[in-house]
Image 1 (cartoon, rainbow, N blue to C red):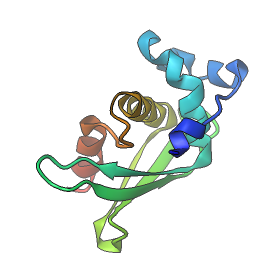
Image 2 (image 1 turned 135 degrees about the vertical axis):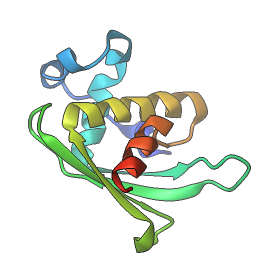
Image 3 (image 1 turned 90 degrees about the vertical axis):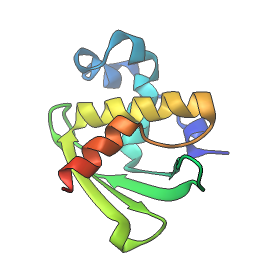
Image 4 (image 1 turned 45 degrees about the vertical axis):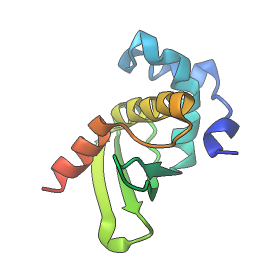
Length: 125
């Protein structure tokens, strides 16, 4: 069973601080995304078109406020040379976690959105 299936939502009170930053349509996932955020890591697989999925582990610091910065580090295939880092406001990162959860519910694959990867790789230019 995936860790996403095991996530318990945070309280409505804990989620309220993020409400102004999250689109109405995505708010159902917010208490779960915050709970995942508080764990500080997730393991998943990057879907590669026409190839094998590449395993990754993403780790991040847990910020207190939505506007605080979160530094996320992703390592692919257990290879230190395939590590990338990105910094963003925690509310923005939680939005990416919501997208990850939406995608997981649809496809049963734990992976970030292409928007997230573009942000991750653009910073590494």
